[in-house]
Amino acid sequence: MAENNTEVTKVAINDIGTEEDFIKAVDSTIKNFDDGDLVEGTVVKVDHDEVLLDIGYKTEGVIPSRELSIKKDVKPEEVVEVGDSIEALVVTKEDKEGRLILSKKRAQYERAWGDIESIKDADGVVEGTVIEAVKGGLIVDIGLRGFLPASLVEMRRVRDLTPFIGQKIKAKILELDKNRNNVVLSRRQYLEETQSEVRETFLSQLKKGQIREGVVSSIVNFGAFVDLGGVDGLIHVSELSWKHIDHPSEVVKVGDKVTVEVLDVDLDRERISLSLKATQEDPWQRFARTHVPGQIVKGKVTKIVQFGVFVSVEDGIEGLVHISELANRHVDNPETVVKPNEEVFVKVIDVDLDRRRISLSLKQANDSVDATSEDFDPALYGMPAEYDDEGNYKYPEGFDPTTNEWIAGFEQQREEWESQYAAAHDLWEQHKEFVAKENENAAASAAEDGQGQNEHHERSAAAATGSSEASNYSSDASNEGTLAGSDQLAALREQLLSEKK
Image: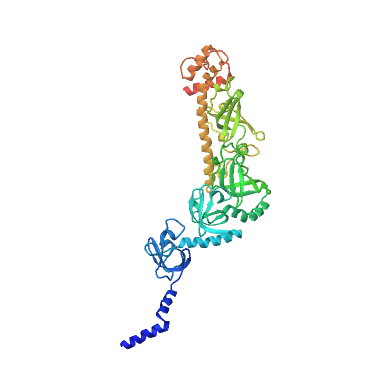
């Protein structure tokens, strides 16, 4: 048996050669490399802080977790798994503990530099995933950490960069400096180049007067930009609303869907002017359409001038109550009748749409209603009313005037009619309360204007406070004077006396 073993050994040695040849043969199976070389291997183990890579060396190489990815704070199992074939760079063949230290991210970095230099030389485009939002921009994984400044992310500055994290983007390479490990990218340049042809086609098809749908992409002090589908247009602040606004954010916000009209297309400068208010009904036209002379409206005193009072009757619409239409007496100072910001009821006298002027009357509005009466005319307070050629009232669709009942199947019309009626009735009730208070203050207002003698001042004040003393509104024949002789104030006296009863 011993002889057989000896023979086997000799045969084995002779097959390889000499003992020296055998050692050389073993050494030849081990890869030869130096620090900084790129090697390939297979992942054989994944730990929480490192990965072992078999590269055919006498020992497995160690890739510390920090050397796995250009992303920060990643777990090894998120990057590789056992069996993966990867490329690594030799950091050191033998550290203090005798280990072979490798780096996956540095291998990726070295490989990427060569590719990126070639792409830049060819004026090409790189593609990568946004992995971080940092101060001033984004970090893009293009095999190495590429910096994309915030000003170059979109066609215009983006305030919130976080939505881009995780997105794959394409960009042009602006700067490349390996010594400083500096790569600067521009997505805006890529978008400009790729969208240039699209923009030209889009702009050539865009015509003045067209109505387009869009989304508000950004807001600036002088207006709002609207994305019309890859191409932005500007709504100047003056075209956002029919009323005066101080800032575009009062009307729109980023992300709002809007309908706009194209005002102008500048092909040379590639600028589009849009209007939001042009797609909305002019408030003056709407007022003229929904209000007729003789109608009572509620408003607020906005300005008092020597010749009268301006009253806001709708948002952005003011009308004038001339001083002669403030009261049934001579008025020298409008402030003796109304005060700034006071709510009043006025009658529409005239609407001049071309000149955008509305004439109103406070005294005619007050004369139009009896504070003690239950005689209600809904048309006087804004409820739509139609009449035939003979002047007969046209009842709403679905209402049977013979039975004074609504016909089945017209529930929606009934609901709409009842809503309009209720709104008009509520306005009428408010107007009656307003007139009652005006009547109570009439004598005091006249006294402030200096119309009447001292005894008239006292009696007017007594009437306003409900005193039982005789006043200018008394039917006593001994009370003679300008106030007592007025037919209109005589009618006012009757109203006051009826209220006291």
